[in-house]
Image (cartoon, rainbow over all chains, first blue to last red):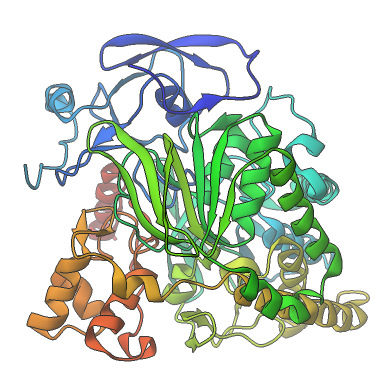
Length: 112
Length: 465
């Protein structure tokens, strides 16, 4: 899958691995989780209201469209959360339901 | 000196407010959601990033550098709480949360410098992945060195439209088109007021020249038709009617959308400040005197969070509000009287210029009535214009909070930030009533979602208290 965001500056940074939907991906030091996810993938999450994939909107912590789930079941706001080495993120509702068994529950899907 | 002063926000207004307080010997608490100071406009890039001030802030590099330098110099003389959300206000205390930690901070005076976010008018397809706010597109570049797409369309009206497009071009990103809903006639009408700040006007013209030299197609007087794309893959193109009514179709993988800015007024609302309807802006704003005093004693409002006049005005308004707070508390500040006179006069020019921007880049209220029923108005919960119109017609919900209760437009996770203005326009048009009569959504605590862990910690505290 190709990325949505395009890096146009600050390209010489140290990189490290994070895991997205079970696959290893490289993030760069200083990346927000949103940038780490969207330079590798074209979206962040499924809308719980059945209207498709979402990739954030305001990028400044106001709209809450970029919530993603860690494999441990924790909900984080991707645009204001720094990417940290070893983080594991799930971006699909199916995956998240499995991953969130032990943690905080995911929002129910409201329509199909 | 004993007064407890809390400043919310560490952008241009908050930093200058804190500085004036420190000058008078007060040690304020400065609470900010950001990881670093600067607010959105002078947002500082993460440690280890190497772009220069000139690259990041262009013509505003000097101002950004001065604000950052002055805030750094304040650090030992203030109590600075970064990455901290003020989520509720009660008389003489704010409730703050940082991560899963929560506490209450008492104040004698509170200066709210909450800033602004993009003002949005829906367009069919704006819920697709790849549609962002213009401010968001700018943050991605400024703070993360990223473009929001490989081929970006900038659409809407306002100073940010041209600023962000020019910044993308300079950074080497591809801007497929700038689609401006305002017209040249709007600009001509605004000229007398825009001449209040000739140097700022000149900067605007320079941005247009950057786009022209780069060969970016710029279309004025457009009417948005749709952001086209698929639920799975996101944005694939934008369709608009040009000024002559001809269809213009621009393939792209990202769209940045916005119609200037709207003040973040939830905290002023929770503090009980009186609001007034501004007919020219078509929005409700907290009422203040010329120095930033709200209707509530001890609550001061400054910067774009109370009235959008830009960063330079915010720096002055922040300082002025702090001087007002000091004066009201009977705390001496050397030179305050002359300072207040000078700041008021300067702000008068900014107010005039802001009125010019409003005329040059009008909020496209008329688009709301024309939105197809299937257009998503609430992106949070994918609620359509048709559903909102249904509650107006079938349930008689013509007041903003009633329509919200029935339709859920404004009830989602953004708490109305990105749908309330347009939603009110849809209701007013459908009910054939003035926008003023629709009213405004009441602010609700918490102003942003809090972690569940914090909520349970909070209720334990309450039950054991």
